[in-house]
Picture (cartoon, rainbow, N blue to C red):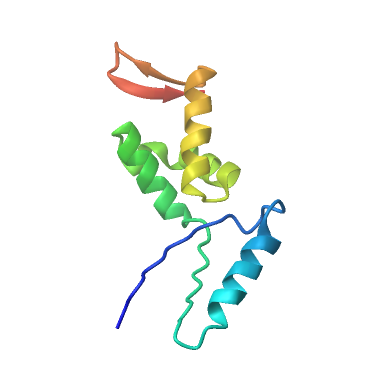
Length: 107
């Protein structure tokens, strides 16, 4: 008996390549001895975004809740988009580290 474990990922909202991918999955799925399992992942819950930002900024959730709610809304809960958005806030100086207060601050 031979085994192969294959994991693939793609963004289902991209229109560039789904037809090729769907064709590939259909061909693999048509083989009787092969089992294909699709797992669709959505965004994380608001509480997950709150925890993620709380950990990143090393601040309690109660202090960052309003800020992280805005980030969650802008990112639709996608962890990658949370990271990208947070990075852009730092680059644009909307999120800065205060050496004096030794904590992150935002506008």
